[in-house]
Image (cartoon, rainbow, N blue to C red; front, side, top):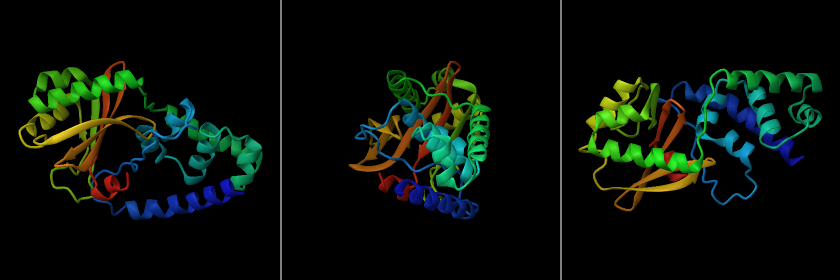
Length: 231
């Protein structure tokens, strides 16, 4: 009963959120959630709540997203999903199938925690030095950088940055100013290792990376003060 009520409320919320997001300033990223103390998160659940996968899920309809999460993260049967979403069992299977195909058409690959920590530390070192060559060596050719500030932080780009050379050049350009006084800390956010950034004892942002065999594919900056404060 609780799962049904929460899922239906979530579907309604997602429908209204899509309308509100049309007026959102700059790129939008999912809210960061501290999952470090959740013993129920298995590998499937961690993948389902990762920032990169949640971002891809925005391509799904609310019903597809609900069915996918219930199936992949909570291992609900198709009969249970059908009852919760109020569709037939055949339709529930179709919702999960369509959602899976959408997400697999542009896979968001996660890397092991140890590799994620190494990538974050290597990125931070190169970014602080403004070393364009080292940054380019870390990036995949089609890397994208997204900064979610909600228009509340002037230092964040309001458009996505695309491509190895472009992202490296912009990150390096801010090396002398952005990282001054920043204290980084690795922590688990949305089921994966990310970097919490603080200045003068105040947390102001979260940095997460998505990687593949080709290198870093996504650089995700969560610097919207309202989202960061909710951590």
